[in-house]
Length: 243
Image 1 (tube, helix red, strand yellow):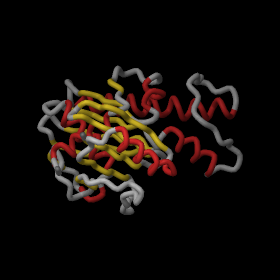
Image 2 (cartoon, rainbow, N blue to C red):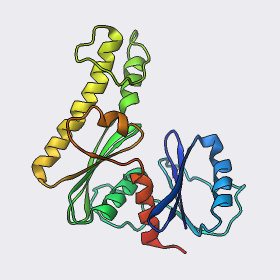
Image 3 (tube, rainbow, N blue to C red):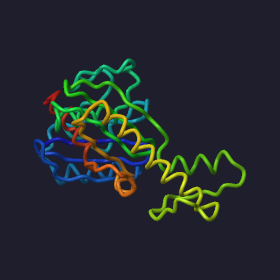
Image 4 (cartoon, one colour):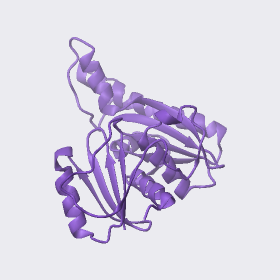
């Protein structure tokens, strides 16, 4: 069995795979990381190898309270990847993007794939039908857009996303919702359209914490997967096979 540890900007995901089959996934606050690991190992003593991925540039220590013997792969720039990485600055490529492209390589090895991750930032990652990663784009995420307007202006309020949005905002708050939610939806639809012009058989994956919310606003038909990132990390672990 494989253990996946994904340390993000806000939360930590723990997942257990038997081969390619997801057994369990937990989303934890960072203070609950160690307790969550203890519970996972108690429930799944068959775990024999693990991968740890973090978006932080700082080295993430293995929690001292967990004493087990297993192979641990810390994902980084030197890790072998199941795709050709043609990114011009490979050392700066985030672990989350490495994992998402690995999932695209696993599920669609011979297709052009655009992976859109709707998290703290919105990332766009393109893998070609030749199984090569070419790069993509990064823009502010949903909540970040609200926070930026509040932080960088004197009077705009602090808001959170709402699902029901009018094109013409009849108040300051409604105008902010219109600008953020519809603006982001049009951005994503527009970028999808640009990629479709260069690839007629493009596979499109939407994932991340805001994926479901964003999917309700989009004109394009896409495949939304909440487990795409952990599936990619599991594929990288299997590809390296450290046991």
